Length: 268
Ligand code: HXC
Ligand code: NAP
Image (cartoon, rainbow, N blue to C red):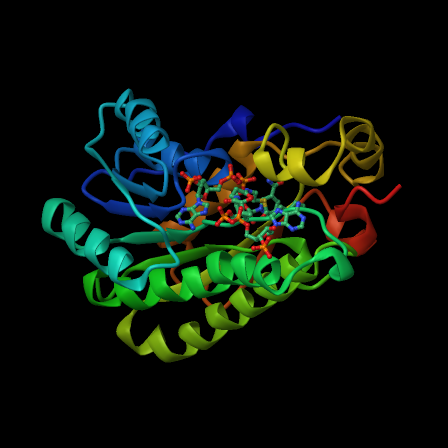
């Protein structure tokens, strides 16, 4: 039931544009980087693991686009700043900035140490602030588009997800405040809220194989999402078609957010 965005990938053209994706070496974020590379953009990605960075660059390069990868941890502000300065020196002003690095696991609050809570907040929330704050001076002004990757847990409380719920809720407010502050610089700031996306680390960590089938049957559109569903929204947000869109939290989730938080975790 239902078709994916693959069937009709929008004909966006990003030749001559520069895109930076924090956490862009796997899953949803790599799907976004890949869509931009396919649309002709120069694409840079950053994550912690050198082998992943190398593999992602090889994947992106097959589109013939200019590609650059650097290792770095979004928890380290100085490292993020260094990577962004390097990307800017090589690829020019950044037109589209995607902040999608995240960490997650299922744990009840009483099984979560202070450090377990902190590590997820450090990656998702503090890391996103680092990426956006450090990137500001390298963004095209006017015209840049910032895209944060949120999650339905930011507004639907989900048991065993207190760390991710808190982090993603904070991330949404970072998005809104910076949309207010940076609008006058001609910078748009928005968040995509992916639903459960098939084949990703996130869904593998949070939902068992068995529960995944049940989940798909409950989603209003009756399927898990695909990487292309999220990439299509990211292309739109980076394009001139979205030039009056800022401060928006945009679910791309087949309608699962309408069902509430218990459907986001493997609780059965
Ligand atoms: C309880 C846990 C735990 C678990 C880790 N911790 N896993 N606590 N249950 N399953 C605790 C550890 O005990 C430790 O606390 C603290 O968390 C830090 O763990 P480290 O392994 O030292 O951290 P680090 O190496 O920095 O790794 C961070 C990580 C890791 C988040 C724990 O899993 C990671 O790097 N993940 C990145 C990939 C990822 O998670 N992708 C999924 C994104 S999906 P103590 O007290 O022992 O020191 C997503 C949303 C999906 O975000 C939404 C779907 C609908
Ligand atoms: P994923 O494959 O695990 O991707 C996470 C990426 O972030 C990886 O490239 C990882 O690479 C990088 N990363 C992790 N910690 C980092 C750090 N400290 N510094 C720099 N990079 C770091 O995850 P995914 O499931 O595709 O999820 C991607 C995004 O979508 C996340 O923001 C997630 O919250 C959101 N989301 C996912 C789903 C889903 O169904 N999967 C649903 C809703 C929202 P390294 O390990 O090399 O660092």
